[in-house]
Image 1 (cartoon, one colour):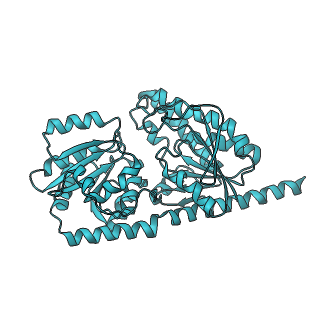
Image 2 (tube, rainbow, N blue to C red; image 1 turned 180 degrees about the horizontal axis):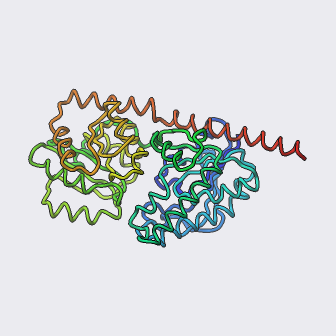
Image 3 (cartoon, rainbow, N blue to C red; image 1 turned 90 degrees about the horizontal axis):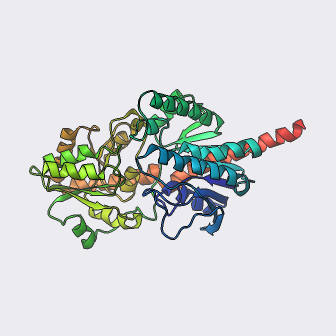
Length: 422
């Protein structure tokens, strides 16, 4: 099968889903072409060694990749972020007609939803069916962010994006979503329930896997005298890390528990100020680390923290940090709404607190700090077992491959009907 992959994000950016889907499909005997932008996420600056030009074409791991120019940005300015999304929509639409011509099925990674622009034209011109992989809910993730304008302008943006998403859902041959509640929400918003399929995300298994604990990694996290909870990822407006900071500060003198925050983002400065204001001595910031550096740090930590704000859009999402932790066999502490909390509760692979409730989360930190080794080992085993059975690369790609195969089959039938009509 000839498969096109359209994604604004692609390695070396931390885009593990499209970045591992493409070579895995090649290993299964498919021909794969990728159309993507120049790497600038998450810092909003072009990666070293890259220079934007109209046509950059290369083959990697059997995948033919073409990069097209875009406006690099990932800060909190709404206009610059819009320019980032819309510039890729424009250049990928033009380039897609040639680079993705002949594809039997097209996979589109969303966000941003603007990446669907090129797919819409290919669907119109070449009748290429599209499998849309929805990672977060638009317009909510846009209009609820600090970038969105308020008042009447914000309502206009929300209404316009809502109408656009309904058209996108209708245009897709099938839609993959990352959580059961996300399927329910899309159906409520006009998606055909027969089109929507739950496919849990996987981790980049080249980077996230069980690994031995090293003394160097443990020392970096703070040594062996206390339990260590690690949060690794974007420090943004939606993560709700203020709750974690307050909880860790409250638990400091009750249990031997430390919170180590790895990453960077727009909320980092305010979090550091909060730590200073609280006088918390058990919270440390390590800054950003490359994905290649994370497996030893995951192995050296006692728990991984997954937290989000208490927003309806997050009830239907499973944060990628959960898959990464479970792939490493790491027990988790989750302070999230909806499906992610349900998975952890059902599997018994961690501790659960309501989102944005620092008092309950403080109790979970205390429980983690005083937990016996036998119970911790049971959670670690359940974490790896849950990942292997429900979230692995093998399982997830198999489900997407089935959707792409069905889409390609429908395209063949449509073309035969068109020829017959002539």
